[in-house]
Length: 199
View 1 (tube, helix red, strand yellow):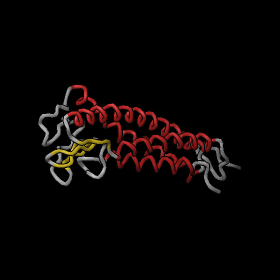
View 2 (cartoon, rainbow, N blue to C red):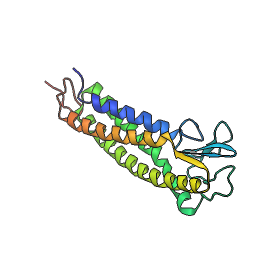
View 3 (cartoon, helix red, strand yellow):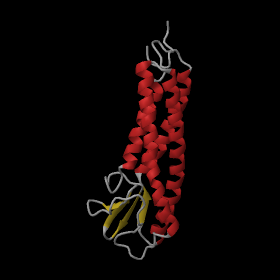
View 4 (cartoon, rainbow, N blue to C red):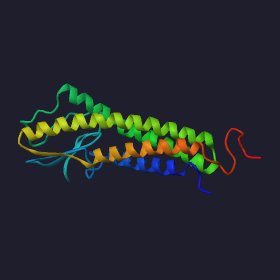
């Protein structure tokens, strides 16, 4: 019999993978980015902990970083508000942490046939969904403002795939929460935690 926790478990895993990809964006991996811009120095890609020139130099990894556009000194990006918003990008891996806990509780629920673990999986997914929604809103504000400033200066710029990974993770976490809540009311064929074992 398939565990009632299985659908929520699969969706939590999907959310974790998507948030992991978003979190290892530049300067760790320049194939995934939140914003990219074309300058005389090359294609600049921005991520959670910094930015890179595609196939070139990268900024130092840090929580919060200076928003500069290499090769385009006439573009002013790093005002105080936008700089402070870069600190909030740490919410991407934090949301990933909630997805991870949801996955762990889902594995416990599936392996131990635990209704309690299924409920905790739903709670972790719900918290992860809230954090993911908050950071997606921040992403849209931060990266769209930067994109418009870069375009106004005469350079090409566009939103990157990491934004859509975040959207996908939010949807997966919401669905995981719903599936987990429904699964908590399902039938568990074997023992449960907290002394709920069938007799």
